[in-house]
Length: 145
Ligand SMILES: [Zn+2]
Image (tube, rainbow, N blue to C red; front, top):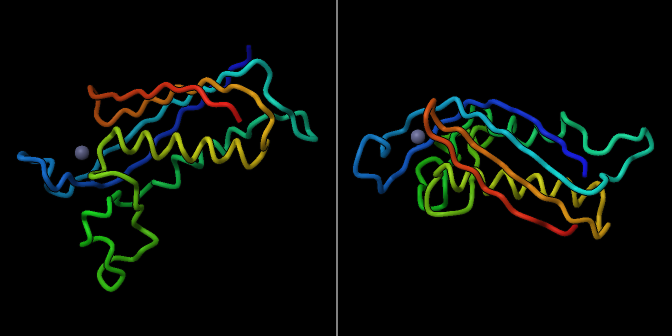
């Protein structure tokens, strides 16, 4: 087995509209991500590199200094009020750490599928998003690409 592990950090804002407490107000976090990818043997490109660490980290950096919203929070999706370059629309009913992790996982899988399509390899993925000093969410999944 081979393992690729990357760490990333990004600063974003979000709000949980339906939350009864302070999380309903726009606020920021310094999020941290740990991505672990495992497969029997990663495919190699012409330089014998498998997946570029920088490209994987770019998935997380694409969220940096932006506000994360879902479709049920249209205030930040109004381009006359908010520059769309600073807004990331993620799937789900709120920009929870769970949905942030799912969004990032899907971006990583798309990156692999674009570079090495239909190889029939099974990738084990573990992605942890740290929202605060003490709060973590981890998604683990297996994918054939
Ligand atoms: Zn928060």
